[in-house]
Length: 51
Image 1 (spheres, helix red, strand yellow):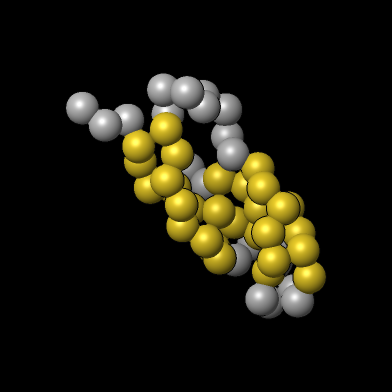
Image 2 (tube, one colour):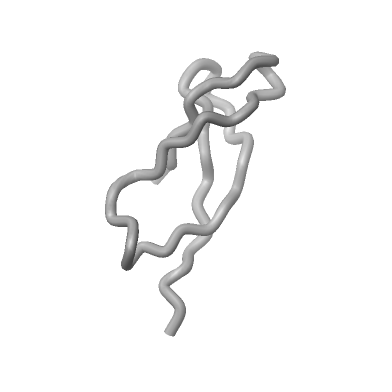
């Protein structure tokens, strides 16, 4: 059975949900944090995984 699940990434500055991606929960237990481009802030910001 696959352990990949869809997650949402939220901008920490403007709190918009900008990205959807998959994460293997078996290998990565912590919340995902990535530097991504936010089209609302118009710059690269930290995006965190939502619940």
